[in-house]
Length: 312
Length: 312
Image (cartoon, rainbow over all chains, first blue to last red; front, side):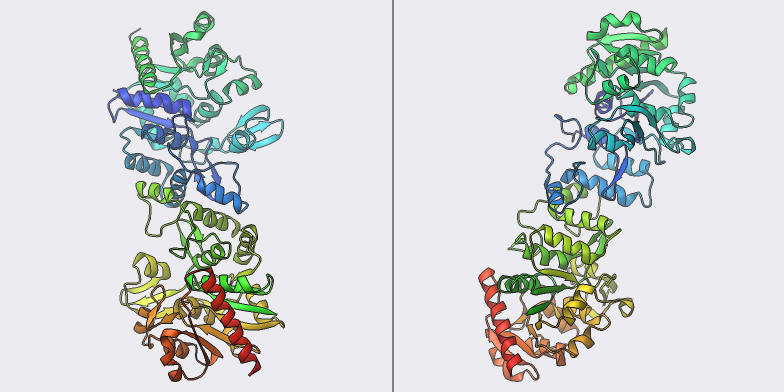
């Protein structure tokens, strides 16, 4: 019985790690956002895929969430000396991922490269990009239309977001691996990880056929709220929800996903909100994932929650 | 009064460093071989230009001659883990040079990129690639026709060399900087550095117009022999000279350059050879350049030798 997780970067990777720890290998597919992929210094960079991959491989930097543990920064220091662009800080080890991916993408799909990297790093779960097409989140802001990483890293999310756009998405296709996981007859649950609903999950939902497939689901679809006590655990989710006119709370998250959700796991802190959330079943628990034990526990609770919804 | 030096990698860089130490900035042009440039991992790599640049910037690894002092190797270790090609070992800091060059070459010439890098690294001498066209040394061997770096690094010069080829060279042009240095009315000497005659200098001589320009010179042209006591100071020069039927000695070097040479500096070890060398004037000295003092001394002797020839 398999599980499909939809994930963005750091928050998604944490729950994916928890799920990977409790589900037999071969029964977990992590479908990862590619909306924040970009070309930089001639290299193809897939930040969310790398965060999930490094995390499942146990190679991630625990403190900052993204990047590699024990990373060194000699490349970027040398690049600065030569007058190169250094606003996106690439570590020396991380660079190997981007250089090798860029090379292989000349003749392979992102799905194939991602699968091979995962295998070489000892990962036994399936990590699939949500599409092999060039999904690229664009952010319409008070400073104009910005490429995602310009908004996110270079400008540190300072501009006010008016709207997100995914140019050309109507002609794109979900990847074969993502489509197969959605159609899997053995699927028992779909889990939206505690990722940024707008930046990590909306690009996925915008892919043709995905919203329909999720609406037509025959298994429970659950989300873990990334908002605790009116704040995002990490990143700009709260700021963006507010700028886009959404209630910055787990109720707002429930409203964003609407009829897609069968269940929503919210934090203890937000227990009082539960009665206000119309629609999905609610599971209250400790959603803060500080360490591997937390991640396993949240994953376990999510799957038990799915089981309860299935039976009801 | 200016000096033009023709250089390959390590040996060339050493004499260039010596010349830079004794000639006022602005009066030295180092024209560097680009025949061993190549594309690797999607990056444009110019090994000889980098060796000369790092050396004149005082950033080179003194022990191995090429690469950067205090280099780290985390990129290449990570690349190996991903199954990438690791036979050409790129250091973390060095990688910045190749990535930034590759980016800039989309809109600039190699000459412009080389000049800007040199300036940013504090170099006040002119380093010019001999051409902005894709000069690429090919090595015809007993194992077939090999790209230069395949022969030189991947196969460690093991194949027997039958012939060197420079495909398309007849349609290439010397760079503007190289041409200008050759035509400089203030030129006082041309120095062929103790680089590999075949691998470093022959590609330069093969460029249209260069041999003619050197033959029509109005200033002394001198070489420092890279062969001491029948052996190359570094690299495969001796092996290649032998395979191509040339006497592995400073006499062989003199024969290779023929009428181009007005003077040849040979090592004390080879003093007995001097009478056998027909053609150029001979200066005997200590040509082994172990440290900065040696390099300055050899450069000083070479320029004094040029001065003597000018007057004679």
